[in-house]
Length: 411
Image (cartoon, rainbow, N blue to C red; front, side, top):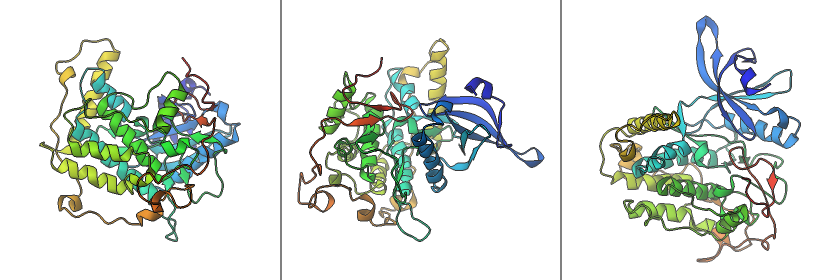
């Protein structure tokens, strides 16, 4: 069934598809209404696996895994999974929380396309919200109290949703790797994730870890503030080599208005050695909150972010419609307040719920190296660099099929 004819379809007898919300490589997302008794209705998002992928076991497994992992992660900064269902045709549907707003990629575009800069306190606040969601995934516990981290593996601007109510939500755990899974969904020699947001150790064939997610978070923050890609090249191979060599362009010349402490946080998250990054998402979020405490601003932080999302949507809609820009489009800025939890305001660093060593110790490192290794430069790949590594892109990137690194980008 095509996306156009699907409008009006009722899934599982209670979810009416009312609007096409987006198309990805793996799935189609609809805005839908959940119907109940006495006229009750609730807006939800329904994600449908594409028809052509229903016969490919690996994609079905990833879709089911997204439902399994998402249903087990209850946190204010993670998009909630409500239901998972199917129909007689063999289609699968993931029913999720609907976030009225836009993703971080489009939010950034709402500034850069008009020659404006994203306000750094807002980007820092978005980082805090996303890191809190990541922290909840990394610190996930099984019912018996055993640590069972979920590694997102696809942290990117398109998977960070910003609501018009100012709430930050991390979404799309389709590529997530849960440590309690009894089998792997990734074939040997395959790297999963958006190419531009891979971490150096993953390009060497190492398993993704929570520290890999933090590198991706640093990339997202760098790009949001710089208004350009961190890793760019004429071919995918060029980009891959830049990431592997950890070629980080200085941020300060691009944004001289940024506090040195904020740049230091981003630089630390982008270090090649995983053991030298922040030990956890929780710690990185705390450091960002410390920088925000000293920002000169006023007003309500959540309301300011929500207003910014609303205005960015309006600016992009005006431009798409070919209408004239509104006064202030090119100098958009907002008053911003610091809104952090009481422990941060009181100056007391939150105590992690679990041991950082349990959560963040990288896997697959050479014995004696990495988190427990000696001094600077201890991190090394545990095996020689492969001459060719396949990259499997996720739904919002160039392809969903394994792509040899010798292949040039598609036009």
